[in-house]
Amino acid sequence: MRIAVSRTRPPAVAEAVAAALGGELVPLGSAGYKTLAVVRGEVDAYVHAGGMYQWDSAAPVAVARAAGLATSRLDGTPLVYNAAELSLPDLVVCRPELAGPVLDAVRATG
Image (cartoon, rainbow, N blue to C red; front, side, top):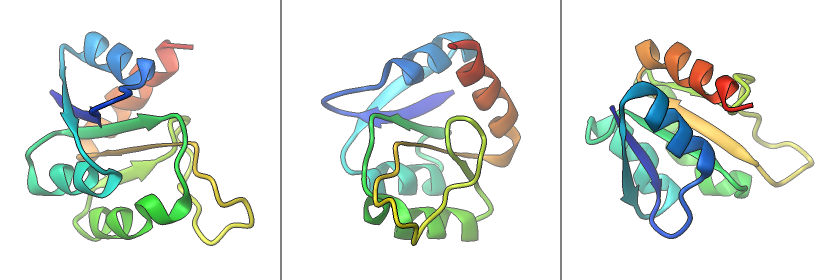
């Protein structure tokens, strides 16, 4: 499993998911590129923690959803856009069949 992460600050939760699932971290650029790398099949998942704003991922997540990918917060709840709170603290984008294993690995990290 290939997991897209920030080039400069890969989150510990992504490292834990990679370790739990026998995966590797793939450092990439912007949130948009990491999301579209999942859409294109260059990576299997994008696991992000550490915050961003809604506008950083809104359009890429819409494209991912249109492509049939699973998108959620790290706790499995839906990503909410156009909310009063502008920050979006975390997200997961992955192939649908990987959503369960990825979220289970996230939960196992505590």
